[in-house]
Image (cartoon, rainbow, N blue to C red; front, top):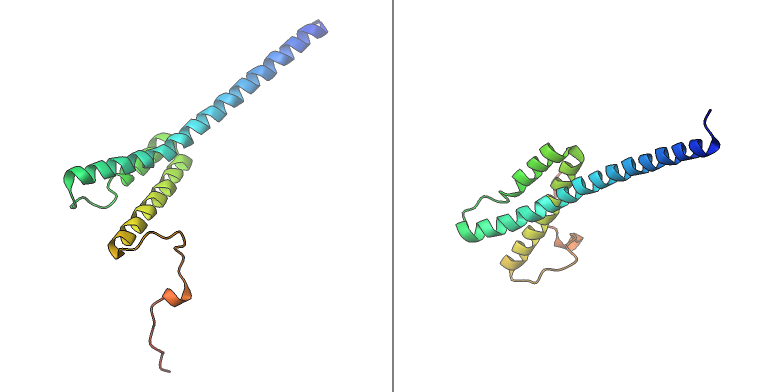
Length: 126
């Protein structure tokens, strides 16, 4: 029969092992999702470098596709979806900057559509 001290030691070692396992699991999840968020940022850097090297004929957002696909393949569905969302946000920021540059206006913080900004449609005939 085990003494109470031996039982306490066994309980403590099991709880420490359990904590160690859960912290490893948390660290693994954080690293997967961290890599998933970093992949589109690296793809943006690659896209900018490639555009500078190749010129204006580069297909749009060509580096975002492999970043999202490879993230989903190697890190899983959840990190892959995060990579797609971060890619969409980065692409949206690039498009807004490009549009503002073409119009010669500074990029505004408030980019929501207003009712007055919508195109005027002719009245319908019934």
